[in-house]
Length: 401
Image (cartoon, rainbow, N blue to C red; front, side, top):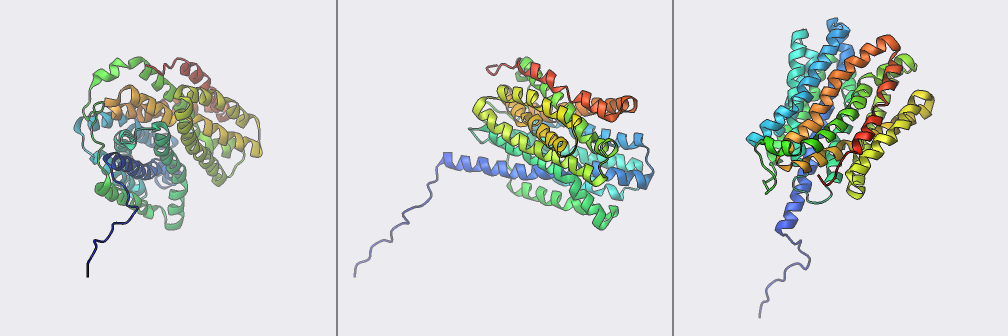
């Protein structure tokens, strides 16, 4: 009796270095996008806690504002520092430890024993948020060769959706278990850190990329980088002012309940998350400059309609304004990284953190000061005209730079 060798299955998956690298790129994107959702969820935690913290500790509005300023400083303005450090050291711990650090300190604000402890916890939680963004954004699409704007939009939008979900998450925890038990909100962050420790690896270096900080590539492209930074700054002014004052405006000047006003902010941020995804896809098809021009010009009529109308039309206009305004988040970031690929972490920190944070530190107090004199609606309406300046800035972009 003769025997014949068993035949191999006819349709085994073909493994090649190129296919393996492609799969690794998408796995890295999915992992970092998942982590980004929770990082930005924690970044919106303080706004949820502030009314309860003001009542518990008898804080003045100035003290409450200082807490918000400390969070902006530590989570946004420090991002370039972490970008430089991560580019220089090449350690993956900037990304791995961030969710646990942000989750533990932000979620545990309810157990603080006094105002100095609140400030310390906000600063430490913000440092966790800041350390994640430069390195994670530099690695999110580093292994993906084509359609970077589209895939960067996935990473960016995941964070925006996390920020939109944060107020509901922390309000639920405080309402269900009390302010003293909101530390339970740290559990997802700790679990995400464990997942990153097991799965996250820095993208391998290529001929264009480096894990070392070098000022020369940034200086060589200072003019186009400055234009992109100015565009991010203009967009961030509107984004930050609305994120901070929209619930207050809807409650005081539009007659919304506190809960309905919070849902108005969620609507605005959620459509902004969708806008980032749509804008990233359109940029791969039509070019980044064209998408930025559409964003800056297109959001203006909807912002105006929001202030000039009431009811469902005002809310629909608000949603569409958020969608169009945030078209440019992944587009600006990818364009900046292409200008200085060897310094992707530093560029990401400047575009995502420093511009966002500095806009908030300057214009949130300025709008608050103006609102005391001319009314909050008037002050916000003036700010909503700023994208007109962004349109003229975008016309200066040279996509061949």
